[in-house]
Length: 630
Image 1 (cartoon, helix red, strand yellow):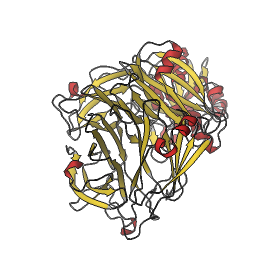
Image 2: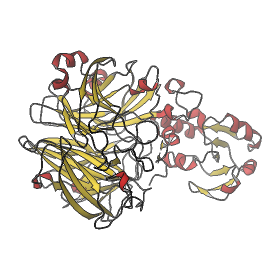
Image 3: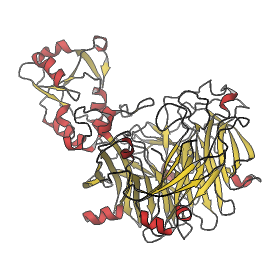
Image 4: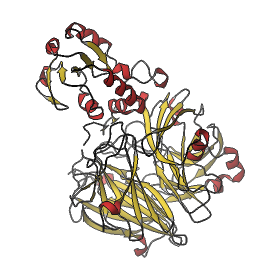
C-alpha cells in the first residue's frame, strides 16, 4: 500500500497529499530531487517525509532523517530512524532538504546547523506557479488545490462530456479558471490548457470531441486532471460525466464526480452476468508507478485477493477484465478492489449485447467500526439512516437493488426495503435479512406485487441482530424492458428531514446539522439527448410526526452565463417523489434560450431532497446517477 494519508473524515481531503500529487508538482519535485547531491539530510518539520518518499522514492542516498520533536526522536518515518535536529551538523550530508512548504522561518532556524559544504533546499522550489494559486500567501490553503480527476475518452465510437457549473461564484469567488491536463492510456501528456469559466454561476462543459479537434489528437482513453483557480467554498471540482455514442449509437451512461482522494479499498464493483463483460478502468493518480501485485481483486468477503500481475505507469490507464482475474465469478456476486491508495475512485464499464454502461465504485472505509448506538437510536429519530433510489415505471423498466458492504470491518448488513408511491404512501416493506459480507443478493423489485412508480429506501432493520456503522451503501440497476439498455448507480445512506440530530446527521451542504435545504444541479441535454431527474423527498422523521407534508421546491432555469431565465414551482409529498423533465417544465423555446451549457438549479429551503439525474435518447438509451449539490 502506498504510505500516504489522503483523507480525513472530519476535514475532507488532505491538502499536503494534494500538494504533493498535483501533476505539475510531480514534475517540479522530480526535478528538485534529481538535482540534489547525496548524501541527503531530510529535515521533516511537518511530518510529511513518509508520503513524500512514498510518492517520490528516488531521493539520492544515503538519507538521514531529522526532527525537532524530542518525542519523535528514535521513531521510524518512511523506514528511516528519526534523529535529533541538533545532530544535523554531524550528518555527512551534501544536501539538506526541508520537507515542507513556506519554509522561510524554518530555513532561518537551521541555517547555522548545516554540515560543512552542504546546500540547503526545500519543497518551496517545487511550488505551483503563482498564477495557479488561489491564495499565494498561504501555499497549503486547501483552496489552492481545488482539484479532481475524470475518466476521459474519445475512442472506439464513444465520447465523453464533462458538465458542471461555476458554483464557486455563489460563495463569493471572483474570476475562475480551470487548468486542465489530459493524459493518454500510457500516462503521456496529450494536452495542457486553461479554460475560463463564466463570471457568474454559469454552466460549462468539456467535450472530448471538441478537445480532440482543438489539439489534433488521435483517439484516446485516459484521464483528465482539473484544477480550479480562484475557488471559494469548495475545494473539489464536482461534475457529471456523460459517456455517449456521437453517431447516435446504443451506448449512453452517466457517472458522478470522482472522489478527489485515493483509497485503500473500493467496493460496489459487480461481477459480470454470463452475457456481460465487466472492465475495471484502473487509472494511476500519481507520478510513481503502481508495482505489479500492488492492486488486487477479490470476491467480496472471500479474503482471497488475486493480484494484478502487471505494473501501471505514472498517470496511466489500463483496462482490467474482471473475468480474467476472477474466472467463473458471476452476478450477483460482488467484487472488492484493493487499490493500495494508488487510484482515485475508478470507473467500470459493462458491455452487453452491443451496449455499454459506465458506473463508479465507492470508497470502502477503513476507519469505521460497528456503532452500538445505531441499533439503539431513539424513536424521535424515526427510521434513522435512509438510502433512497428511484423506482421507474415498472411497465417500462425493471429495477434491481443490491446492498453492498462499504467498510472493511462490516461483517453483516441487517437491512429492509421500504417502498413508496409518488404521493408518499408506503406500499410495501421487505425484510432482506441479516446479510453476510459475502452475500450475493440482488433484489428484483418485479417480485414485489405492490410495486408501482415512486421510490424505495434501504434502511437498517435489526430484528435478527447485526451491526451498523451508518455507511450503508447499495448498487441500483435499471433495465429498459424494450431496448435492453441498462443504467446503474450506487450511493450511501443519510438521515433525512428530521429536526432531531445525531452527530453530523442530517447533513447540510453548509453549516451544522440538521441539513434541511436543497441545492441540486440538473444539467440540460444536447441535441438527441434530453435530460431528466427523479427528485425524492425522503423523511427519517417518525410517521406520527412527519416533516413538512409537502416540499416547496423551485426549479430555476439558468443560461450558460448563470442568468436566471425562468422558474417553476414543484410540490412533492413527504416520502414521495417526482419525475422532472426540463423540456416539459419550461418548453423547448426557453431551453433553446438557455443553451446546452445551461442548467436547472433545484432549490428548496424547507427540506432536503435527494435526486438522480440522467439523459434519454430516442433509441431507448438512458443514463441515471445521483445528483450533486453545492
